[in-house]
Amino acid sequence: MPEIDDLFAEFDVPLLTAGVDEVGRGPLCGDVVTAAVILDPNNPITGLNDSKKLTEKRREALYLEIKEKALSFCIARASVAEIDELNILQASLLAMHRAVAGLSVQPEFVLVDGNRVPNWPYRAQAVVKGDSRVPAIAAASILAKVTRDREMAEFDTVYPGYGMAGHKGYPTKVHLEALKQLGITPIHRRSYAPVRAIVEAES
Image: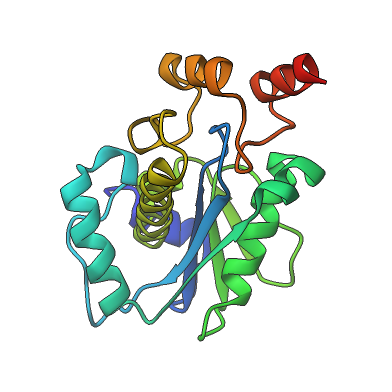
């Protein structure tokens, strides 16, 4: 992450800084999951990067290492019902708020992946592509993705036939065909167009 030194200098980031990221805006089902992480400079973690750029095996190994070495971490979420009620952006910001509020060590500064910062009392800065530029955000992205991927694999056994373990809820051809054949489940987001169209067709 060659840009990190410049980034910290630009934002005058204090040592006790949390990184925040979310996973699950695009899928048609399941919660949106967020994580907040404050890394320990005395316990460095090698190989942190955007979770999407890591293999599943590497993500799983880093997931355990982050939970072991971080000064503080919290995994939070917004439910399917909240996504449908608020919209996915507002639900994601709410989940981020919950993740930071749940840290056992409250941060002096928060770096958030993307271009939006929740309405909260913390000093904060949004960082575009932060999961590739800021180690704490990368750590948060790994915790969030591993958590959500595991949940979708569990849902695959609860709702067989949808292929959730493979596509993780994203609108793939397999998922869309399954929706047409099997209908929607309680974990599908009714506010999302492909799901809403099926609900309206059945009503």
